[in-house]
Image (tube, rainbow, N blue to C red; front, side, top):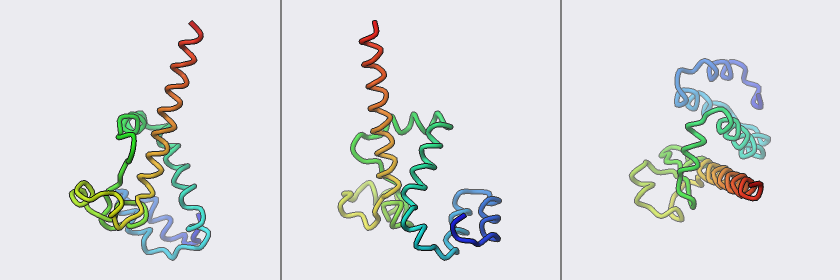
Length: 127
């Protein structure tokens, strides 16, 4: 735990939904260390999700090869900063949000596709 707020950390672990956990988390004062490491932490979380959740892995493999977006009207860092309709009808260069979660998902999807292609190519040379 990076913030030292044990009470809120316990509330987050007991939250019924991801949105409830996010709302509790938004009440925590973030340290500079969090801002320096949050992308790496999220990447580790998503890598674990890919390894543990077949549906998530398959969804990433089926996603658009250029941009995966996260519509999040209330999150200008992880999401597009727009609701779904706004995200779909606004070019990504004009989103108010950074879409970092979408960027990380896109990187993971690209890596999965490359890994599949390498595996297929190796199988072809072994025959």
